[in-house]
Image (cartoon, rainbow over the protein chains, first blue to last red):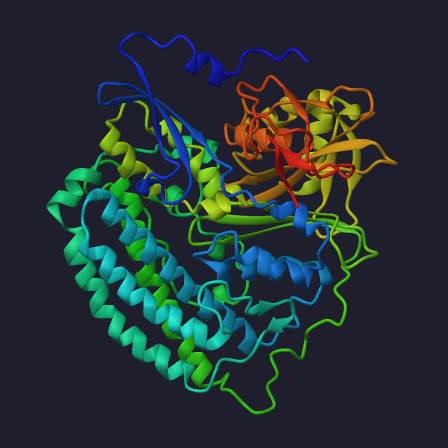
Length: 393
Length: 165
């Protein structure tokens, strides 16, 4: 079939004498994984960026066509491997809605889900902030973030038995109840972590060098962000109050009190790298608020009891009716969606498509990094906070 | 605007033939749109001030298997001002032994995010998008043979002399 010349061919053929084609990645440390960026540069100026991905493609969607819903959950973990709980939660919610059992889930289970998801959100944002610091040249925040993240990892390991890929949230319930003493330990962590967050802000957020490197760089206007399907901190950084936890009001989020931080352009323009970074630190503070409320309820009216069985509502066989359904949820990176097609006869879905937030957020990179310096491209890429496991699936 | 009003709006604008079928057996209702008109319909839904579907959440290719010989594209739209969602579908018959790819119109001019989604559908399903500016493989290597998410896909024995098992 005769195809018209693609944009890629037009860009890479016939370079001018002053232009140079440079590969950044796949083993470049600032690409946060295996991402290759092909740059057309003129001296230090980036004229065009062409992302190439797929180095971590593991055929998630093909695997789903031969696995039952329960068996897919461990695969879901491995998409955004920094926020496995959130991936699980979205997937499980989708299956529960299709089965029509989403209203029967016990309150304690829902609160535990939100609690572990928000813990995981903090740990994901800590990675984003820490590695962003290292991209810009600040080494200390990286170590501080990893030190604090370690506490969350230990707690979640205690609950689920695994450090990163939890498989903890199941369709209809949980793997296990929280271990005895988890709530107290978590409360202890929160009181430890609050001053650390202030310290981190003092170290990085108000740091003049950091502001100089990020403020006014990689400005993403709101209309471009929406057109490119950006979500999560990318979209909120551009000044739109859009959080699916509030829009869709899933799980027990309507009962919880938290704010949605948006970018205001305090240091430069609205939607610059600093705004996107600031959203993440603010969201950590909001997640702490959510966790405190969850802990409060889990220790009072939803206290643990010997009769409570988190597996009580687990369906024996997960066979949803014949239908197709799209579920979306707010992940640390943005809108995570799953599109299911069920045939109503077997336990195996006909098709599962994952709409990964990082995939869509990355697609805007060529648009906002035209004409920037190569060093700024690193700052922009870091502020998008991609996880290649999710881009490539 | 609710689902029925959107249906009426599209019928008024493009005639009765624009909606081939309405699927409302599950939790989310879907409109099956005439493949010839999909770009105009998407533009109308994006720009009409009663709908403002400005956000394309997801675009998925679907292969209906060997017996049906149909290919489908599913669009999940979201409206940020009205906090609404809408599902559009387009279905085309295609004989997979004909040596050509099934062809749909690209909506990448309506939402730029569709560009990568359509590249993914091209990569994994072998669906050609008319009017797409940069239709290349996205997740698989450029020299990959076949389209892995098709139901009749046979896994390759080897890749460039390297055995796969």
